[in-house]
Image (cartoon, helix red, strand yellow):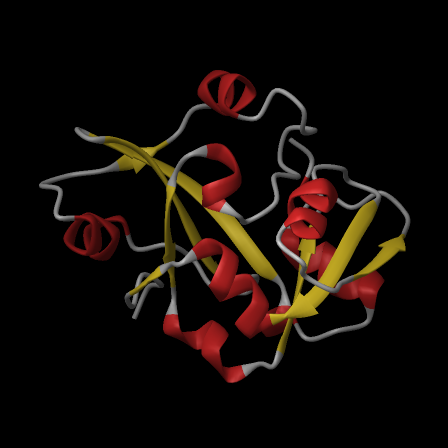
Length: 151
């Protein structure tokens, strides 16, 4: 299911924007003219219990030890490109929307994202983004909130 269809079914208001191709979360912030701390960047990890989607602000980097702790795992690793292609067949590689529930995954959110009222994210394409209220995103994701960025 596409992100927009999912959000419409959930009754979530959002704004969609088309922009030049961008391949990083910080690049998305640049073309959308927003702080990187408003861009929700997904990072997919794999542990013994399966895959999980970690979401943090674009400028931040993931701390796999913190992620493992948040998920109750002894260890996690980043998903490979081939695993990503299988997990997100309708998305361009690297443009996955940060909505774990849409893909049957647990979502773990870094608390730094709580600082903004709105979030910007990719829709599955390198040329489209949506902006929505952070509270609405939290409602549809039901994320675990844990400090998962490098300290």
